[in-house]
Image (cartoon, rainbow, N blue to C red):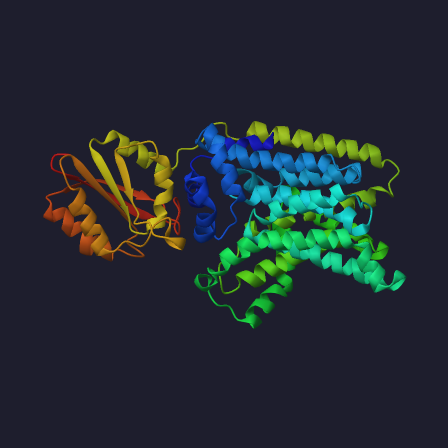
Length: 484
């Protein structure tokens, strides 16, 4: 119920709007565009493409990641080999932290990666420990993990973690019966991992060409970032951050799980810890010198961290006489907290700056053309005016990274104005005078003067780099031509 507040978050952010427009493309074009534009696999975009058939309002769109998070919870609660305490605690963390609140409302692949990462790992652990050997278990693991690999690029580190754990299991079993026997005993797992690698290869090949555009980090810098101990503290702290110090209690439960896992040589704790540590290390190492780090890239490891907290609570509760009663009280408290959060959540979406601009444009007569000095900044307004035939957003879209728009040039702006100037026409230009105003000064303003257009509109609007309120933003100027 707490996640119901996501339906009232208001207008889409830039990344969400960009994802929406990729999903609107013909199905045959989505895979190539998702890789070239966002460097992401196409599975979420395909799902959103089908989902848009139900509607394209924010509430309908955000219901999709919400369903994925609910799917993760259902998968967790129906895993019989986990204890009730581990399931209840992990489920509460999975759904009710501020981080999960972000995942549930983001129109990005992260909620889907959380669900499939959890599902894949819960299928993998019985296979690597030998608890299951049925062919359908290997097939299920293979299918779910391939789907996981095609959710988000950073889900690849979960695959690496599974491979590391499989090799570690082989190394631990070899002294007992010989390396050959240990290897043969895991034939089904090796076949599954090999099939996953082969099926993942097309995406790897497709995205490899983009590495030049992502930068060229040095090996030393990547290794230093991957091994930085600060990240192994800040990552779990952020993912499990909660009010009233509850996040620290969750981290204490994680520490208890790690301690008991080491003392008992527990493979469940080993797999979960490997997933979290590798996700943190490899994400930081890969992005160093290529792109800025964001905690959303740790989403595939989030369910493993929640499960570690659940296992830690289960191990501590085993020493308490009234553990069953305590679990029931905790479950009731989590349910009560979710009801309180729902009751206090806003039940009407706020009207953001771009929705207000769209309303202004509807009130103005004639055909409107809107330039964005930084082309890809246009996507939020494009979403707001998606059904308004009188508004045309000019972002100069290109290919690859520039699919959402390019930096304006004087030639493009002048040519477009000369081409579209007619009766009852209005032109708008969005730019940030603090960062870049030369195209407005050199091309747009002179063209308006040349065509006899006068300024009739001015508004401050947010940009990708500067958001309102607080740190200012860009200016949107509107000019009316020929009696518009």
